[in-house]
Image (cartoon, rainbow, N blue to C red):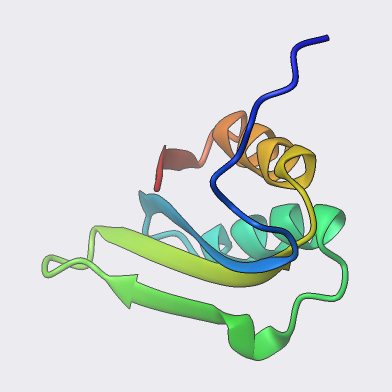
Length: 88
C-alpha cells in the first residue's frame, strides 16, 4: 500500500464542486453522494449556481473532511455518477 503525504491537515473544511446538467434531481444526487461519506454535513453547507444559459448547474458542498481516504471516496462516488460531468 502506498501512503501519500497530503498538504491538508485533517479535519479541515473542504469544498467539493460538481457540475452537471440542470436537472431537477442533480442537487439531490450530489448531496446524497456526499452525505453517504460525510453524514454530519450541514444543510447550509450546500450552494448552487446556474450557468448563464440555465443549461448547467454547479453544486458546491463544503464539508469538514476527516481524512484523505474520505475525500477520495467522495470523489470516486461522484465521478462515477452518470449525471456528474465535472468535479472541482
